[in-house]
Length: 81
Image 1 (spheres, rainbow, N blue to C red):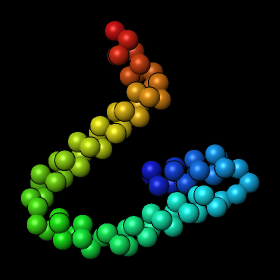
Image 2 (cartoon, rainbow, N blue to C red; image 1 turned 45 degrees about the vertical axis):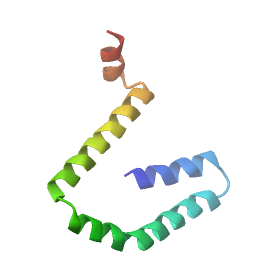
Image 3 (cartoon, rainbow, N blue to C red; image 1 turned 60 degrees about the vertical axis):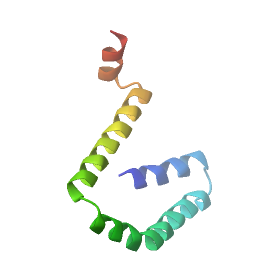
Image 4 (tube, one colour; image 1 turned 120 degrees about the horizontal axis):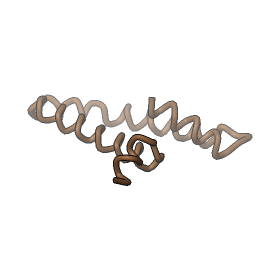
C-alpha cells in the first residue's frame, strides 16, 4: 500500500509529468532485485521470531508516527489530555 501511495504522492507533487514517480518505482524495483538474495540469506541465519517481532514493532512505530503527524482525531484527543 505504501508503494502505491508514494507513487501517487510523487505524481501529485510533480503534476504534468510521471518522470519522478517512474524513477522512484524503477529504483525501488532495482533495489529489490539487487538486495533480495542477501536479505533472504540474512533471514535464514537469524532467528525468525525475533526478526518478525522487530518488523512488527517497527511498522507499528511508523504507523503511529504517521497517525500523530496527520492529526488523526482519536490520537490528537489522547495526546491533548
